Length: 123
Image (tube, rainbow, N blue to C red; front, side, top):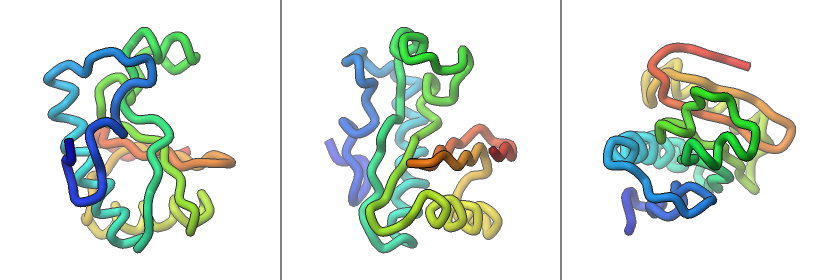
């Protein structure tokens, strides 16, 4: 099921196959909207490494207890055309311009974390 021009719902599913609760689905749709905007500005595909995680899956992989991933408000992203630092900077600029939601933005060696927590968090 497509939820934006370039993202399908299955890209956001928990890796353990757990069903996505209805309240999480609402958050995922809002997240997908922001990710579509990021993709449009980046001008290339954005790959979702991890989005929604069931609480059980999140615990199994060592995620923090109250992870934004368990709420359907977070995604870990990569792009073949951008380094993680370039993608991070692009997302930060879009947040500062008000083009996408304020939230968490984390830079890792091989990916970028973006979430819609509603308040600024950077790492």
